[in-house]
Length: 509
Image 1 (cartoon, one colour):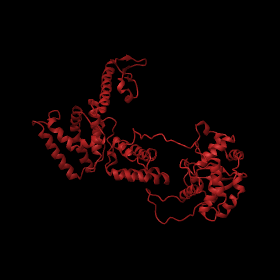
Image 2: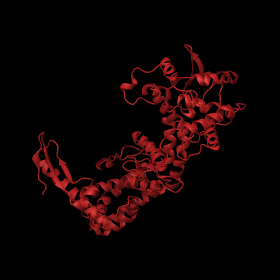
Image 3: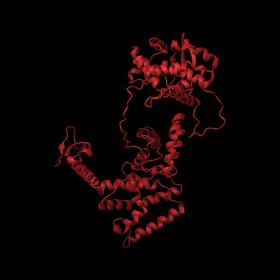
Image 4: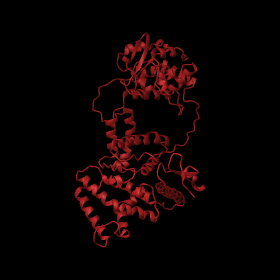
């Protein structure tokens, strides 16, 4: 038996040992109750409710294992009806005239279930009306989307609650069709729901609004666009009507032989979760259907010990780059980008977007400025990185002088059309970065577990650490955020970085 025990700081606690067969599902051996600072009478009421919830969970775990329907407590059935209300009112239901006519017919059906007189939900023949509510309120569709099967008693309890909410839902839909988008006070009675339901906003509409408000990088829009094209195609209705269980099933269905689980988790789900979280914060929808669950990703087996280049791989790339003639922008990228990445640890995209004006001498130190003004910088913060003497000796400054102040590694062109915010043109610097990666694969550095551009960051950190360059200086050169707030104080200046880079050994080719 679970009994109440006075807590040291007021209120009461209790615990209940869980049956062995359900402990794994609960994730613990016993369930704990804490009433908080309330009276004994209140604690007893809360304790009874808690015990009912625990017993219901135990029964549901066992029922689901047997393929039987779930059992709901009255509180759970009420909460489920509230969730149905938000789901139902979030969908399109026809024009104003049709809604008014439908509401009138629904009321007539309700009166048909009474013995006459003053209408009260307590007086209606619920057995008569349950099939009507199940059909008209689309409860079967709702429960299927939630992957929820109820036992007979719980289903009847749920439908009885929906009966009370159904006509309030119809009234709300009529008001919305009339142009009244004021606060839905009826929805306040439901736990955890604000009642916000803008049926005009589809998933794609949320994506468009998020782009306009958040102004993300073009690369992010480019990568997430396909996610919302697919989501809009599969669920063209109101974004507010999407259910967490429904979206979980959708996300799991995206995993194919061509699309790995890690891609679905880190790109598809993250994109949707981010945009819907923003929409909740903007009071556009009531909840985020991509929150509260996750995609399980199998542990990846790696045959490669390091993400950095081996000495032979680095030598192959740099030797080929050294032999490359920089007669075109594409040739210049292959000639200089690997060497600049090797000696700065910069992201390859930060190098391919460099302009001649970003190379300058400061206090006797030649450096490049990696700036969001030139293109995408992951941290959104500009930084100045000294040039290694080996790069200067190879003639990089002469190349910059001959190139002028514009883009060094791609041909600039004036835009011929206005960009669609949801489908921006891919930056030329990005295309230059991709061409360098393809070239690296072509010359024989083609290990599928190796990133042909990004591996230079790992290589730079590895070599820099061996050269006893402080981690704080390496982070400052690479553009990594400080590991702690404290490390963010006393930032390394250009002279500090240049002094450290003098200890960075030369690549032998």
